[in-house]
Length: 428
Ligand SMILES: C[S@@+](CC[C@H](N)C(=O)[O-])C[C@H]1O[C@@H](n2cnc3c(N)ncnc32)[C@H](O)[C@@H]1O
Image 1 (tube, rainbow, N blue to C red):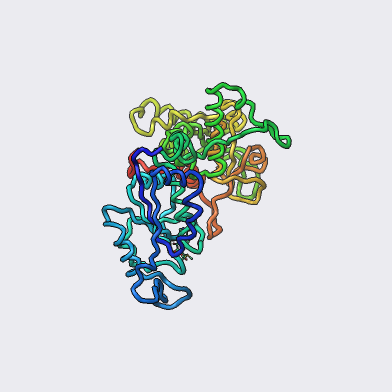
Image 2 (cartoon, rainbow, N blue to C red):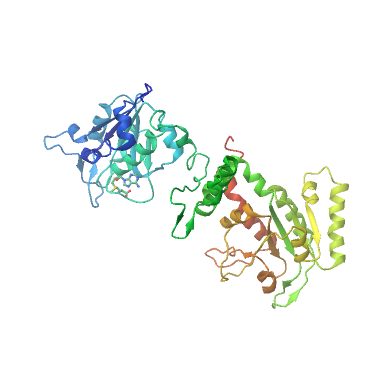
């Protein structure tokens, strides 16, 4: 039912007939009948400046195709209202990617004007008379009409009164940077596939928990970058970062000739690990050495920082340091975590990338295991649950120090969180 809210939508198109079915069918058709939404189609040809009603011309500089003329489009836009009265949007593959957030903002505007390009596009000088350029994806369509329809569908369903219950739009995909949970209906069993038992339980709390878990896992698996935004926005990121550990094994590692050796702990490695753990909010730093004298040395350093230098910023990192004699001991202490080995060599089956690691962390404590010397032995890597793809760029040279490798890997894992929510530049 109409709530007295009317959103006017004008589509500037050379092919108004494309909108005939679109404006009549389903929910949008009903919103138009109910007087909530008004759609007006305007053909720029009516604003052509010559008797042939030409709207396009050849591109300056040559090249194939025609370009829609700026003067014709400007006249058309001027006929629709002032800049203040209208929100003018050009459909363009060069535009800002359309999103649910933009849909929400547009649903609050009283008059939206969509300009649909055709041919090679529009004369770039029209930009000064526009508010927004939107792309609906990294592909090229024949014209802006289908894009305008997609945006109109996404926007109008958010206008109060258009959908039966506003909640049905609020809980959907992207509303909290998560994809929506899966849906099921009758039959309960189809081709051997059953509806999850919990959805038949009638227990609303359990159903809500299942849905939240399903949405989280689906987002992690299908859209890792979107998941990173969810983490940043929801503070789940902090909880998950608290499950990520780094470990440095001094045994079993290789020497230059590939022999299995035990390396010495180094001051630099220890300090850098502790500092990284502080910067990236890691759970713990694990130092692994089978030699007691070496372990004692590390414990002595940790004690010094924890006692004499306890007020220092770095001391908190030292408090989270654990010293163990073997990888096995660490695994036992952590209750069998997910162990992710690292290596400068690739070519193993099923290697994981940094973006896969959040999926692993979501289910259990996770350790990124590094080897000193010439790296972890084959046996050590074979004992890991996963091995990460090596850091490798065009140069093909990747002999990084273990400290540098740790820093790069950590930034690849935790970095997307910082990218999508930078504490210095964005408000929460
Ligand atoms: C054939 S396309 C022009 C493509 C242009 N020459 C280019 O390479 O970017 C014609 C019109 O279709 C619309 N269009 C095509 N793909 C689009 C997309 N992904 N998002 C939004 N509009 C699109 C735009 O209005 C564009 O001006």
